[in-house]
Image (cartoon, rainbow, N blue to C red; front, top):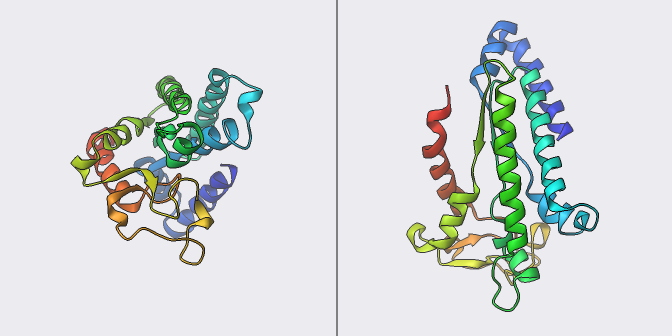
Length: 223
């Protein structure tokens, strides 16, 4: 996340050189900064390899995450950003990897991870609302990804999806990232019917469906 702030500073300096300070300030104030973070903190750092769940309870950990997001937003604001959207966590317990690891034979969603996602989202929404009151002319938007994501999972046929529990890559149960490529594993022939590409990441078609829902739901919040 610190690297992202560095990249943002570099962007601002380039824009200044091109159009000057006044125009840069206008671009920053009217542009939209979108912040996406948190899924790996929960799925990997807390419940996975990091196993922070052995040290902290989920209430404390999600509070740390929400406060960290607020700190990042404040830094963006300090650089001139005024419209900042922060996307919450999806139902992480319903990813194929979590179904496989925690869902049992029926491969149900891992409810502990879904609960953690919901807890983080609730805290993040409240934190952003409180922060907005202290930052003049700010437009801080919490983007609820959890609800539309869950709706697609519950009603996949309404969106043209058929497979919701397995990823398209390999067995669809545990492979992710670099393990999914044409040299190392098989890939399904009907990618567009799958919600998940690998055991953790959704497909491009899913993101198109989700993005349309979010765009229609939040476009009116922009000024």
